[in-house]
Length: 375
Image 1 (cartoon, rainbow, N blue to C red):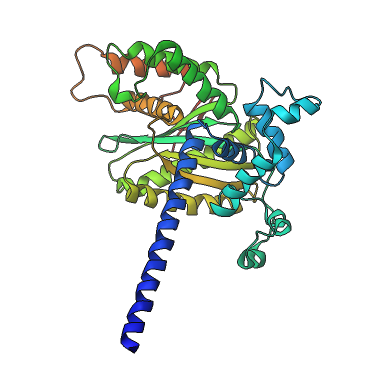
Image 2: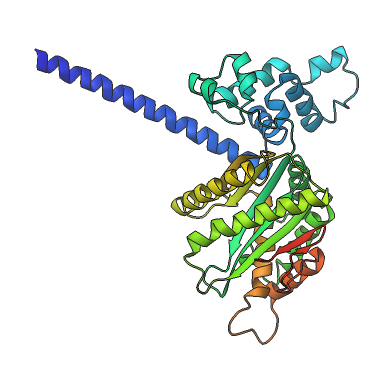
């Protein structure tokens, strides 16, 4: 009898474990879905829109009223003008209770875009471990650097990492919407990947570059390249290159006054192989957290470091276009084509429109839009 009873308990334990594993997998899938939407700046449901606000306006993580106003300003601009709120507005606009429920699910269930420790303590959602470890408050109200990075030249003479920097996080939505409007107007549905450029797609690709450049009031393009020979394995080099791109790029933006610290850093890498991405982002995270605490005196908060699928993400696709265009010039085909093809023409067009420097000089090249960082 005892053996039968023990076997039954084992089955119950296995069933419980299976349920917990299934629930954890579902939560992880929901988190990844929100991250993909946030990375692409294409929120469509209320929960995803609330997540986008929490991501791009860190001050909204601490205040539901701030969350409500930011939500109305961003997604209900045709109904809410930012002025006095009337009784009719309260009936027409999304209610605070709905936004608060979505915020609670994102923060309490998915553990994403968390409020400061003091706020979570007040809300009763701060764990005992966090109560003991919570120290200096993060810069909750600080704006966001949103950086979309891609790499190129992994089997060529020079390894290259390029980044599309959006210096005010909320600008990601406006730029993404401009690209969506362009797609709707032209009917162009292909992904913006440099490898897909041909005679037929060259013109639409140029148009996409124009849209980004013409909406570049809070945008920058930066890249860093090193000779691959003798520099070590690519998976060791990539996090180092991204680190230098980010740190020296932040110094440039801070010292120029265009995007001064304090800031929250969000970096999205074009996803490749899961194992490779985890290694790159883990090493990069360690390096950046050390720089944030030391070099930037705690004024830089490492908020998000994630690999995201570039499918349906025009911002990552633009980062690919920029990086691959520079790579085409730095690492030309061997043998060179007798006549320049569509890829060569697009590469020259990107360089011309952004004004990026390709000269291998000893000093860093800093301009308002395009930045080369020499190592």
